[in-house]
Image (spheres, rainbow over the protein chains, first blue to last red):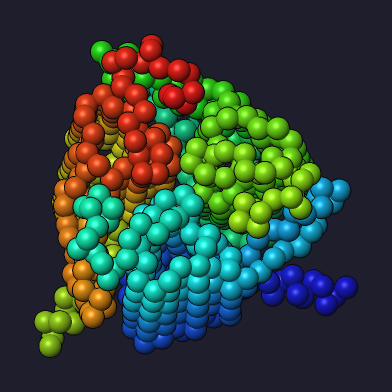
Length: 182
Length: 182
Length: 182
């Protein structure tokens, strides 16, 4: 019983610690988060302000990764972002879903399905994209603003839409109509 | 005239009060918001950090409702969320639209159309979904990440897309192709 | 070398200054941001809390413009919002894209394509819409919640979807089926 209270107090302190860290502006904030938040960060990695991270101990960010403000990570299922990948403002990476197979039990009591998210090297995930559990995004891919990525894609893919579809490939960019790469 | 200044000062204080409340981390924040923010909350309801609520006096959250960070509510038209319903990060519930029928008057001076939003019991509204004025989401429904719900749906619906369409039902889940429930 | 340190310190201070300004609630916050943030604001313009603005010196907001919480602007390419235009919560205006034509160089080293965003007078950009570089939205247009606008549109357009399509015109509103203007 005492143990329960101690655990709850510890969890509360951790939550406050992370909230404070997330609010610190500038390069000072980036440095402190890399050192103290609990995720693994390669050299040159920058996590900007107001980024929410659940289960940071399961989040691995490569070298020179940039994460823009208001992005959100739930790394319960594991999230790995490759070197040089750029993440725009307000993106969501959520590696866990609620289970809802059973209608006779409330969803909140059915537990979770966690599946890892892997984003390759040198990708650009544009503003407000969503990446769902179990998705692997191949090296060098580009995800358009507002896309919802619910499937794995090959390296060099250009994705857009809800749900996201492959609208081009970086190798053959010169063959695409202008509107497809906007 | 003095009355106007007093009203403005009171509104300003209320705004500051709510901003401070919204920023408090952890279970302490959840408890203080339930007690002091002005919405009605059932037992076990948790409203996490950085949730924006306009017109909280018209927002009713059931028992064990969970609201994740960065969600936004405008309850001008009334919003009611049923027991056990789970709301993912960055969701938007907006129960009011601007009127814009008249092109000869600026939209900002045409007033509002408010319509209630009702979300049933035991629903899961996944990350970054948007629910528009007048929508009723039936008990036990699941709304996929990034969906924009602009129509009422029956109990047990599974919705996805922009605008959201019914892509399945929870009763017949075993008949769905795997990709439809992602 | 000393010059580099001074520049970095100055940039850091500016970042902190802006973060603090963005957090101030109420009308006091609106007034201080208009005076001190660095964007140009017409009379009656209100930028609410927790709005992120990069390159504010290239952002021009007209008279009576309203910007709701959690919206984000990157004005590197220039952004101009006309008088009386209303911007809902969580909207994104991003006037710059990463270049990614060359697969042999990391995207983060390829630089940017900046293109101005122009939003006309008396528009309503509803919750969580995204407006991409180079887009001009004509006077009196309405953009639905969650839309991703990647093309220029004429005055009086009603836009919705990902990517946004013209689903109606304000002139002929009485001819539209009810569902088209939701």
